[in-house]
Length: 323
Image (cartoon, rainbow, N blue to C red; front, side, top):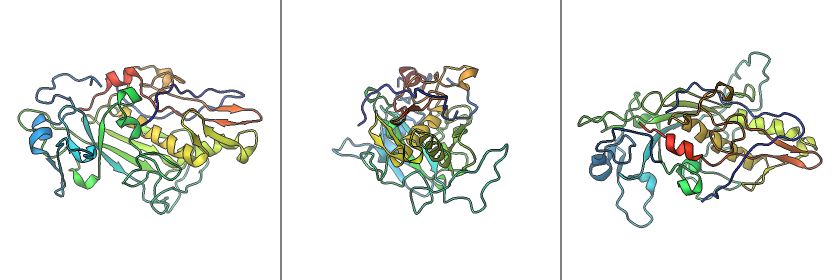
């Protein structure tokens, strides 16, 4: 369980802006939904499925209503009074055989994934209960309760083959209730540059629901900023608020944070919209996951300190739409 904390990327000695996440998104848990008849938690999955019938995914895997049994794995069952979100997570499958051609004078960064025999930077299930120097849970920040800074949404991670190409969740769209779609998040190992770390299409799960995360660029960004420290490549590099010490743990934490940042853009976060912030972001250094353009703090003669946002704002929790 993570602690509540205020985090910001402050800059001392220079102007080192961490990459702006590119996207085009229209913004809109006390979910910010209306018309949730027969869907008390407003997650787009009818109460009848979450209390009685369950969902049978393409291929036959069933996700049944929760029984309330002790130690029941919430990721394997549905609740009518707590939001569920199905997410197609498309991990990378190794670095491109032919490196991409980087345009506009942008250099090609390193490509050396962390997991699954160097094929992806997002670990495979089962995820650890506690993030460590070995692995991390990609959904920890969004699944945390509001009291812990999260959104309290249970993520049901699936593959593309478990739903139709339309992303429609089987069994939804009956009885006059609209269909519900899964979100699709794709990992890219394209390492061109360190500016565009993610991209998202405008909308909600049912309107677009598609996003991309450039995990090698995130890692290369950390290397770039850490190497700019007082001792070059040997500079101490860490996040003091999350006890993330060293580049490996920073990689885990930053990928984790930006993954749910992009998920936020396809769940209508946030209503705050200012061109100077790149669209629907909270202000830079606002200390929340949906902030835009945070900075790195370099302390001369000491270290490089990262303050990676791991909490959602109250505004984000009010803005969420899952349909």
